[in-house]
Image (tube, rainbow, N blue to C red; front, side, top):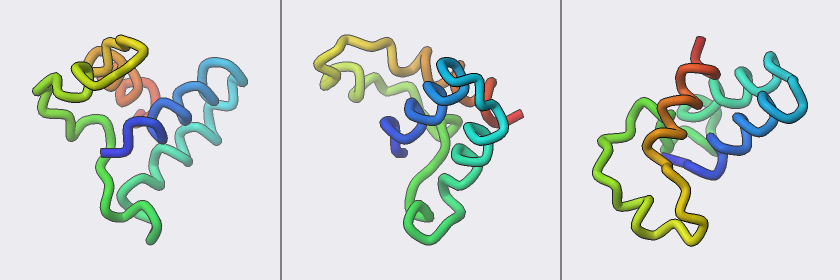
Length: 73
């Protein structure tokens, strides 16, 4: 999974209101050659390891669910 890329797409969606671009960017994860080895937010198994390592103490599991709900549809 490519958490920073997913969050980047969500920031584009939220901050710049560029919904189509954000959704296209998110859709490219796992498809385009340079991102084909990565998965979208719905691949999260909710183990929490990412949150243990996050220096910003972000609730990553919760955010990934929100990202997928907004960007996959």
